[in-house]
Length: 444
Ligand code: SF4
Image (cartoon, rainbow, N blue to C red; front, top):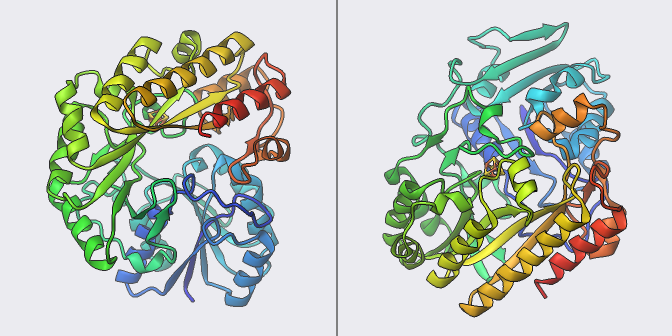
């Protein structure tokens, strides 16, 4: 095997009650795998998250296959595990490391204790990976030290995919597709139609100002419809498309584009991410049209019910904008999955209470229109390189890497996606856990 690409495990052990809805299929790795295959490079994709593969099993498999190249993604949440994987491997190989956080972690990655070569790639990986494994790189690294090389793929790089409408994606790399959407009981496949976000949330690694040298790109309507047609042919009785863009509905123009795409696919339902401000210029008719096109759920980051916190994290919405916008969405018949975060730096108990009150109010509003409002709730984690991470770092307040949060898992019964990087708020940990639990219980 020439190349093994790994969707890195989030935890060392396997997990029961795998929460499939919070799992995001590794479409980005799929694009890299497809480009390697097109260039006759043998490649396999191990999805350690969806296949629930433990750290030890993954190492055994890599030791058995001994690939010439190992591509692996690193995030703030799995940095320690990925470091250990790289450092535990003793056979000769070359690592290609990517993922959202590497632009802020490359110094630490250069210091990983391994004699193996490491290429760190910031940005889109599908074109540069082909040239790395064929030893045909057309650009110099932006930094290098012995057998460590750092590449940046942005607007200035020959490896930057300016037009993403022509990108091919070989679905055979995704072993668990189509998935069963257990919340709505729908057979579902995932697609990505754009790259990059236009907003600047202070806690998010996808924020525009952290990625300002990589243009936001969107696929054209024809390319998206072709992919949906392809999926319908591939998977018998497909019922739902999940759009995994960082932000699919960015503004009213995108809302219209989405309606026009899916009005042509009346036999399919779809769900995607939106921002409250995406609807700032939308009329009720615009949102009704989204529903008519098959949109059955929008995932929207609400984050907090406190105006002060919303301002601090640059969410741009006010509480009244959130309530008014959600009312229009529910009125149209569209369900919402709302994301909340407790424990922002300096957040106090009144802020947390306001968040819980807002979540409860949105639940009541959804009930009024006979729609569903479900919550997804997390504790604030400072992700590397984000505005909040940097300000905590400047004040020397960061005190721990992100690790699994066993206490929260026990409190709320969710076994996946519970991490902690410490508590930076003015609320006790037990009160934070209680708010997380109660906001999740609104789903019952
Ligand atoms: S809108 Fe979403 S993807 Fe964009 S910066 Fe905010 S949290 Fe990140």
